[in-house]
Length: 192
Image (cartoon, rainbow, N blue to C red; front, side, top):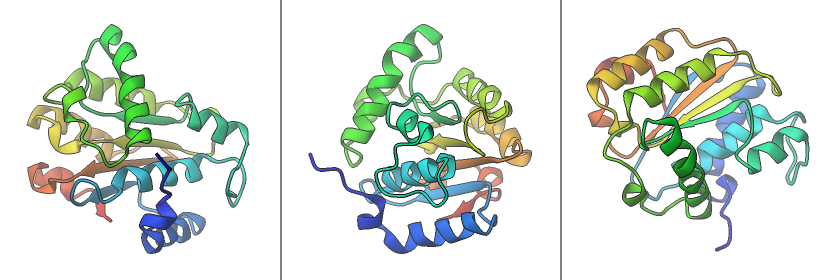
């Protein structure tokens, strides 16, 4: 499968987000909402990579330490939250498969590989990880895939992170059903 870039899918959206980031005006919390298969994941990953890149501006095919770690899902400042098991053992064995599957087929249906909801323990782990200082890049990025698959209590936990995001942190929530998110969550996100 040939990789499709965010520039090919949504050049105007990506350019607008780049300009905001260059001017230090990028909102800390973004909502990428749209139908399945429109490219939310591709744009979120591209933005995350650019925010974490050590080159400014990031060039195509960058091989800086940040971009290399990004491609291996080992970047210490880019974190993902998605509906997989809450236990560390299950998370470790299934998260790589989920992430590689999303990158290999960003338009595919991931529901068969996921549990029904994003567990509260996963949100707590995500919050703890994002609360630490960036270790490689200027900023940290958290991507919440399938955000609609959180229970109200889980959304309340995430709300604390949205209300008081750590310094130099950007959160990107992806959903094809924004109406399932709590109004308090939606009110703290800039919709893209």
